[in-house]
Length: 408
Image (tube, rainbow, N blue to C red; front, side):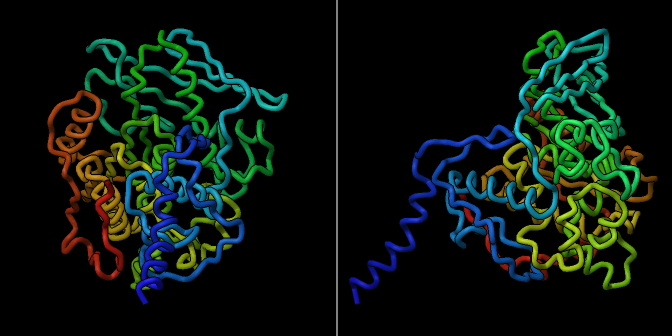
């Protein structure tokens, strides 16, 4: 009996030791290094229905638990791959040639790959005060949050990269000029790719006067969804601020489906795949049965950890899914908890204002995140708040059946 028990312990322990072994490293498309000993994601992964929010701390490849930060690096890359496979499409690595030039307040990004080339422009608005190099926020389609003094704004037209007029926009834009109209990448993945190319150029252009260690990304509504994806896919982004991104962004598909079942007119996966091209065509296969997905958007947000994330929500618009947004992001915070930095991620939901109109009541919270992560000030960013009564109906035990480990 003792031998059998020892063998059982050994069989459980060896895979975990392999996950945390100091093996050689590989580099992902987002530039993240992870141990080569990470479990490989099967090409024919078996999907099982789970009405709860899936466990971020359990490998899909082999069911092993995540117990260390090294194992989280592996699990993070696995989650990244899962989102690309089932929801967002493939994010290509850095292309053959990336360069840029600065003329006045316009930064031109030049990209070439496999004999094809594109160029797109980024407007550069430097602050009138402060000392260069400046922290900077990259804004998809422009920014609708107040910019603090001393912070630059780099805005670009993400529709040029991947059009998002409606469901007929699939494969239209500069990204698809490079990679083909049949590329699996969704519009949001294409935008994330473009933001990574902007950062590539910033790394070679000190004359832009941007501090590469203090980069943020923001956008509102559909562009807020894109900001969240960009923050998840590129670890050079220090602070991600999606604003009112709703379903497909800060909201969890499972909770949104339940809201609709309860009679609340909110956007769900089955509707969103018919509306626009923010997601891959593969995702449409699962939009009517999201319970089989091996992830939900608490795990998309969790890809940003331990970097900073501040989610801004509008509780007054049912279509955005206020309960789903609050519950999903409250659950996402558990990843930061596991990594020992829960106050690196915050959520603020405030209603009674127009869509993408930033209310003054959220200014102190926004300032706290900017001041901490751009200016190294000691501020209180322990913010998981909504002005909705009773947490908008979200109850942890209805959606979470797993525990948060302490990752060492």
